[in-house]
Image 1 (cartoon, rainbow, N blue to C red):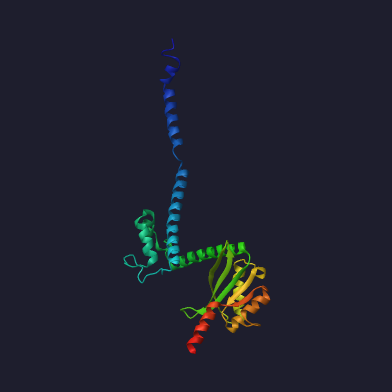
Image 2 (cartoon, one colour; image 1 turned 90 degrees about the vertical axis):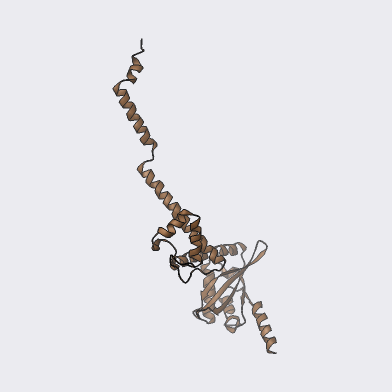
Length: 259
């Protein structure tokens, strides 16, 4: 009775066919990503690629720093056969990663993150991260000692190196925290630099600094106006001065040679 009527008849009607076609088109449209979604996906992809490229540059800088390798070459042009460790290592990574290689060649010079300014900034950030880790280790231990010595670098600029010595998890650590420009070579100036560096690292030197190790020069070891005496009087009463054993050895060797 309803063989050619009811639902069967309706399925063949123009209105049903048009409605079905409209529904299928709508379904296809809904199943495809929207324009906004496509833009967001593309932006996410570009961010990921940029992070990978910058991460490669950071890893190369980390490698050269750990192995004490120079960064620059005499000729850093695109056709140079020896553009320096940094650029050559980045190019080597680019040979095995299309994203890194493409960005290294296609990006404008001001967006490649290969300039000396960017390199120094990244190295400075990494140095701050290392100092933060050292400071956290010192805080975890509690007590610590400080060692310092000043000398001129190749540019004839006086600098003071600062090392922290502390005990942690059954091991004694001597961690270098950096060079401090020694602009004033008096006991007041040098002691101020030592305490300023400890303060910047967030260390409680008033109660936790228990020892100081310097050379035997009067500006460092003077009982009343030396660096050790000033630090002990102004900031750390528990910080006893110990004459650096390495300097003692040098003095002994020199005295034997002069005999």
